Length: 119
Image (tube, helix red, strand yellow):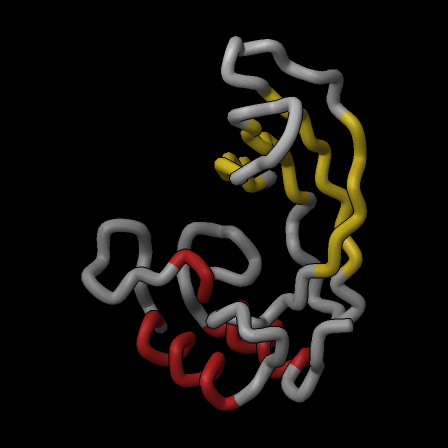
């Protein structure tokens, strides 16, 4: 499964409106975090650039995106435990393996990266 990401970016210069459209490879249960994202840029006229790869670091298990896997992430995952999209406690950031549910598999991923810090 791939996660599609669309993010608007503020720019200065030639392009007045730039949007990032990319595919992030599925998370792995490693603390390395290096991922390849394929991106395209679109200007306000709708012209789209060719896709090109960009390497980024994602820290699997960092549920709150603060650059470290710690007790705060564990608490967020526990609050979302047993949830699926549409559940009142659903947190897509806690679905670490991207299977559409927060369960023991996600907890094992977080546990494997516990203590890791982003580069």
